[in-house]
Length: 139
Image 1 (cartoon, one colour):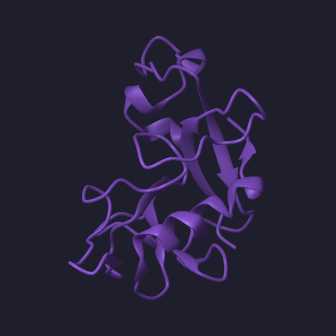
Image 2 (cartoon, rainbow, N blue to C red; image 1 turned 60 degrees about the vertical axis):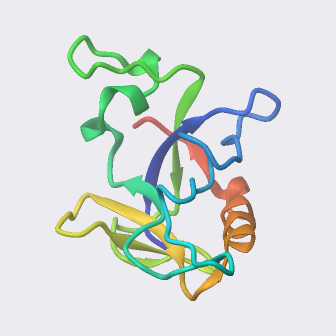
Image 3 (cartoon, rainbow, N blue to C red; image 1 turned 180 degrees about the vertical axis):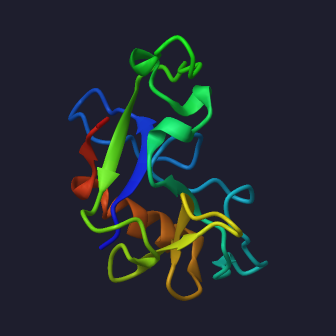
């Protein structure tokens, strides 16, 4: 399973990523992050929930503010850096229903997408099902 990194809003109740269809949550925003047809089915493209090999090259607004080094512009409030998986940052399965693929022309950024066309609600449930596997790790 690839090691993927994603800064997300921290749920104050249990410290795990907050689930939701909005910025920096465990989920996708529609139609910004995925393509959905009239029947509500998500197409399998190189789009999905953004992930990275490392948080250090991400834009400041998605880096948790406590990681501000005076140069990176870190300003993410209530966020933490989460890691899922332990293999190399490479295309591959994230779960039975999800996979990570590189963003077009990028080797350090990717997306988690469905492995087959699926209803948007099911994609969100599949992403939420990975929640317990995300570990806070800003190393």
